[in-house]
Length: 219
Ligand SMILES: Nc1nc2c(c(=O)[nH]1)N[C@H]1C(S)=C(S)[C@@H](COP(=O)(O)O)O[C@H]1N2
Ligand SMILES: [Mo]
Image (cartoon, rainbow, N blue to C red):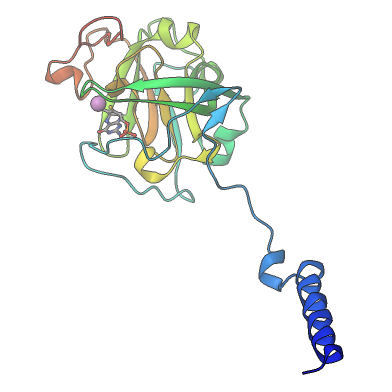
C-alpha cells in the first residue's frame, strides 16, 4: 500500500467516526423518560426503593388503577369516592422521612403525596369522629386519633424518590406515618373510615404492638 492509499483509509475512517457523532443511529435518538429514582435530595443521601424488606401480611397486592377508588366514609357529613387521578388533584407535598420497622431496619426516602387532612376536610368529619381507620386492599388496617391526622402534615404517598410507588411498596398509596413505627405505614390504602371507637386496634396493634407506636417509645 502506498502512502496515498493509507492516507485515504485514515481519512475515510475519520469521517465515519465523525458521522457516528453527527448522525447517531435511531436508537440513540430515543428520548429517555424520567423513571429512574433519585438517591440524593438537597444534599441528603437517600435509601433506594429496593432497600425494603417485603414481609406484608399477604405479599404485594396488585391494584387495577382503572377500577380503583379511594373511599372516605364513616362519621363524615359527605362520604366520597375518588379515582386515582382525583386524589392526585390535591396539593402535592414532598418530604424526606425515615421508615423504621420493628424488625430493626430502616429506610430514608423522599416521599411525595397528598395530605390526608385535605382529603378528610372535603368530607367534613362529624364531631363524634375520634379515630381515623385506614383500610388496605389486603385486609390490613391501622388507625390514629383524628387530632394526629388533622394537626400534622401526614401524607399518603404516591411517589418515593421521584418514582411512582412500585406495587411492593404499596401502589397506589402508602401512608407516611412520620414519627411512628413501620406498621403504621399502611400500604395499598383503599378506604379512610372515621369512627367514634377510641379503642379500635389495627392488624398489628390487635396482636400486641403499641397503638400509639411512637418511635421514641418501645413497641
Ligand atoms: N397493607 C399493608 N400495609 C403494610 C403492611 C402490610 O402487611 N400490609 N406491613 C407494614 C409494616 S410492618 C411495615 S414495616 C411497612 C414496611 O413497608 P415495606 O413493606 O414497603 O417495606 O409496611 C407496613 N404497611
Ligand atoms: Mo414492620
